[in-house]
Image: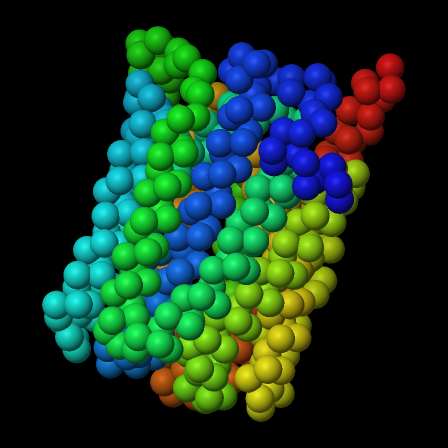
Length: 438
């Protein structure tokens, strides 16, 4: 755990841990710290508003269908953005400035525009302006995701990734833990619309801090433009890659099942269980706290056992999480599924990103990442519509039960369909250990 905690700030790094990055060795520690700080400020930005976004929608008159639309429209933004973003990342002279311009500036100004929409409009006008602006923000953020992932792979040494990303995720969870309850207190104190206007403004300010930090990252020199333009990638190549195809399908099913219920947990907590905004925020931080502990623990586990093993271990418990909500009658009982969920999802998210880097090819990583996230966001786009219909017709608990059943299917896929990739991963670990010992 100590090694994970120190990795993000590049403390006590061995020389061999810094090998493999595509920037100068002397730049690596600074790059690791800057990338870590970017995650901290970006998480603080989201913590101030994202947990309360469905509650804002209900304050503006949204029902289950509109809450589903709020979630789905953001996923649609991701679907539409990723492949053009991969092409932009391939041809951009600087991936760093591509991220800064589209996600860091334009995307974050959408937060500020949302604050003005809530302040100056009301009812359906404000509701659909907020939905549209957050969809635009999602488009701009995901347009840069291939460039972000590719640059991260270049500046973070392969040997340090497991513990480093665990440490960075600890920082993200710390920000969520500290700031989410403050957002709830602010909303309870200032009410509607003032509380949401201020929360969106503070979120914008924290996001601009992340933009400034990211803009200082070192970036390795790009290959000549003619060489980059000469590379061609056909989307069907991903379909022919069996390991990538299987990984994408299993992740698609899990995310689809999760988002059938995902947008409605906090709405159910407030509307049916009677929680205040502050209680919603405080209970959300339970997941962040458990996730922080999970990152400290699972970073070392993944370094020893591998990403696929950790994915499977998480999926054993994941289907139980939405089912735990079926018997809850008091807001504070939500602590149990939230803490267990934060712990388990920290393992899955850490392993899933590492698996993505393992199953994608370096020469076409931007495009493979775009296709992967397009598939995932397509699941996130479709599922809230189904969840909204289920909530409006059969209630919240039916959506929770359906989500649990879908997660069982995803778990079976990761255990059965990825059996061969697991064997190859195990052989790779044995070879790496043998090379290290030699």
